[in-house]
Length: 128
View 1: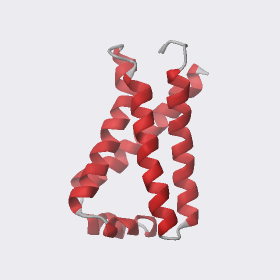
View 2: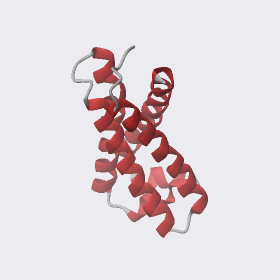
View 3: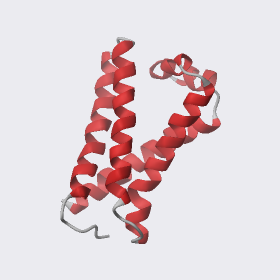
């Protein structure tokens, strides 16, 4: 189980780092023009996109860094929970925009983040 949690956490870390940095350092027009799935970015202000991106980057770092450094590993499930909340917002936006296919993909990321949150809140210690 621990191996599965590390694999999922690593995948989510890579995903949210890339996604988050794109939102923090890019423009919303550039983000929306990258792919049809990113057209939602035009519905948000640049500040809101940066805030979402910052939450994604912080969550991604929080998924692995505390456990790797063995400093406050209790932060790992809270980071995963935060990313699950971010993805809950993403699913909500997708459903409001009638983008069911993309909502299902975001729901899968939400499920992976919830898997890490539940798995890391348990009694088993985090081992590397």
